Length: 279
Image 1 (tube, one colour):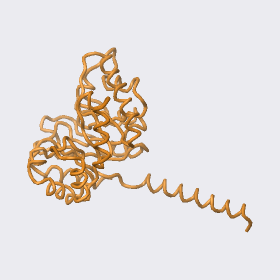
Image 2 (image 1 turned 90 degrees about the vertical axis):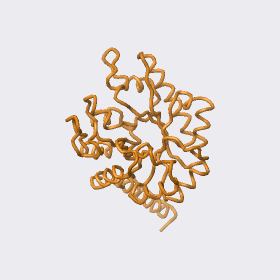
Image 3 (image 1 turned 135 degrees about the vertical axis):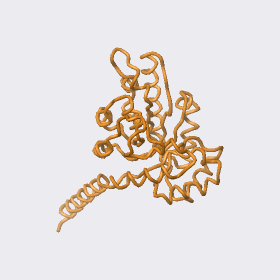
Image 4 (image 1 turned 180 degrees about the horizontal axis):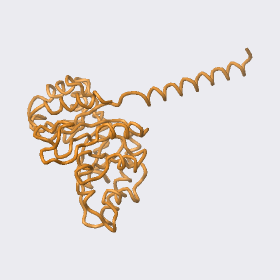
């Protein structure tokens, strides 16, 4: 075998290995995080080390923060590492958190703490221009955060799909002029509740579905997935949602959120078991 043949064999093997690695990543089961607002009556009010240990014991791979309980980035990293959890993301609120020095402070904190992404938790505007400007701001934040390797998303509530301007949903105005790096963090409950199709909403922005919030629509008393809502509203089509996000190569994380019993781990555990059995 001469040098050229040797190199060609090596390149062929490398290409084969790369293709195999891509295939393995595509088929790997996506991790599941718990949005910590789900247990807001417990989080930071008890020993957070024990709380994180319980979350890991249930089976979760990570957590999404909704505040840090006045802990430092170093403290947060240690809590995650000791529990064997990943910092899937963090919810932040306010335009100032996604621009200028506020954005840089947040990105530095997350990088030190080991938090992998962030999302705008809430926004509301009264004009189409307001929504478009918000999208542009968030897109610029996503471009800046790329230097830290941190994806930036916008989380929806119902009003982004009940407010329309010249027939266009407020949600779509956010993405009208935004950087293609800006991700969407759809909340299944708050897509189904206003009467929209979760699958259509996932597929409308391919490559922008880094994570998705899994939450039942207007849930029953305990907020268990698959249990009919108390008011008779529509159920989230879980199997269809899972198939749609799994088909998007940008998708990385499921995030379970349950809001009805924030002083109990039971909804988190039951919903984890429901989802884990389907992915």
